[in-house]
Amino acid sequence: QVTTTVLTGGNFSLTGIALPGMDEGTLQISAQAQQNSMLYESQNSWDVELVINYAPEGGNSTVVALEDQAYTITAADLNFTDADNHNLTGVKITALPAQGTLKLNGVNVTLNQVISKIAVDAGQLKFQGAVNANGPSYASLQFAVQDSGNTHNEDLSHNTLSFNVTAVNDAPTVASPIPAQAAAYNTVFNYVVPANTFADVDSTTLNYSATLADGTALPSWLSFNSSSRTF
Picture (tube, rainbow, N blue to C red):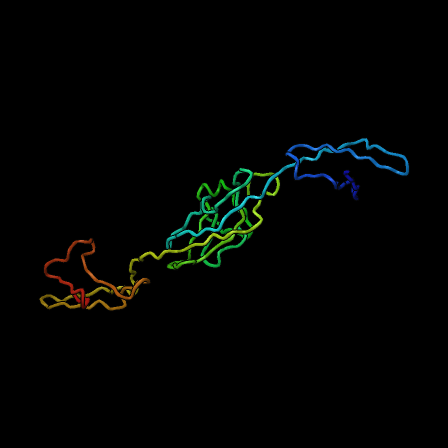
């Protein structure tokens, strides 16, 4: 027996319908009311659309990014599955990385922002660590996948995408430029390059060499000792 309860505002609720065993489609319902021995038939009927959809699921994933380079997040990183064979339509970012930046088309992503699969496929969702930062489990974000179903179209649990950031060798930089030097005619010229002239974020041990400004070898009358950094 199906029981109809009329609620405030003209809404109603139904009990006694075994929805799990029904197929998708439209269920037509009419109501009757009984007062004492009188049975009143409703002049209207209602169509209830039954849509069966299981929520999609994502999966935890760990990807490898390179130091000082943006990593492009792909749909494959989300490990999307759906029992109803609906399509992935987007992903909601439910927790932002504690370090580094997550951007959509160059703009910072906000908490609970939904990113469409179209944007993901276009390579617009990118993560990048801080300058010169690296390490395993460097950062992570949480997400919930969404599918093309009409109802229950978001993952009920939130998954984690972790980033291992691999170190990249950085070129040395000039920390203290060498001032112009003057040499006297017919006098031996010596100059020791100061130890603090160059810096390297990856190492304190540097190997030295010298060329002319255009990259060609030094002339025969000018030599450079790489061990002592002396001209």
